[in-house]
Length: 131
Image 1 (tube, one colour):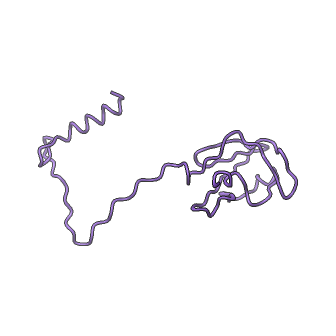
Image 2 (cartoon, one colour; image 1 turned 90 degrees about the horizontal axis):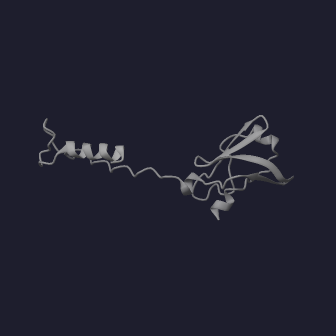
């Protein structure tokens, strides 16, 4: 339901009013677990809507008579709150005074446990090169 509500604005906007709208513009999904806003940009007679994941032009009005306006867009608007990549959870903070340990690395590239750090770096380089 939130995806459908994301495609509806709680206020009536004429095409010309998109020129002066303040971003982010609330949608009907706003308040349902997230802000669910869209950014509207206007350049002359062109209007674009951006969700952070999707950027699409707003085409002509299919219907526009107060209090309802229906505009054609070429893509489904995907809210970041539902479809976006969430940032990884942060590591827990250590208790004050707790000792902080880290593996010691020798100049030869081996840690105190005997594992090699250079092979890990080499593997990452191989992955980056697609090997």
